[in-house]
Structures are given as structure tokens and as C-alpha cells.
Length: 102
Image (tube, rainbow, N blue to C red):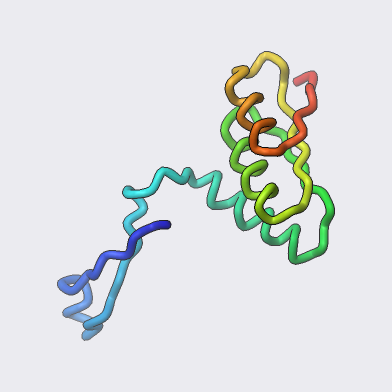
């Protein structure tokens, strides 16, 4: 969870005594993971049974993790030449990895 920081000095001039800002530097989530969580949530909202994406790295693991929680199945296309740890991570988190020729 991203912590909120009370920004009292920043809020003084516009008269906002309860202004809070997100401390994005205090979370290990990548910008890709945040976007993929929104995409998987939308797939669930639309009653999609499956989501798919091509990736060369960590995005596959993030998508698989969110899909495992939200329940649409996740198919990840990843070239065989990419790091085995990225492929293994996506599979470990519930994604079905497919070899792509790219």
C-alpha cells in the first residue's frame, strides 16, 4: 500500500489544512504494475474470462499476480530468449506463458 504524507506546508497557501500526497518512492510497485492492476480490474468488470499481453520482462509477472487475485486467466507471450527468471515468475504467479517468435 502506498503511504500518504500530510503536506501541511504545501497546503498552507491554498488554505488546505488536510492535504495529503502519495509517497510513490516508498513502494516497490512499478508504474507497469499499477497500470496492469487497472487493466486486469477492467477485464474483471467486463466479465472477461482471459487476458493476454506480450512482454519482455516483469510486466508478465505483475499481470499474472493481479489476474490470479481477480480471477480472469492470464496468458503471457514472451520470447524464449528473455530471462528465465521472468518466465518462471509469471508462471509461478499463475500466468500461462507462451513462446513468441519475436
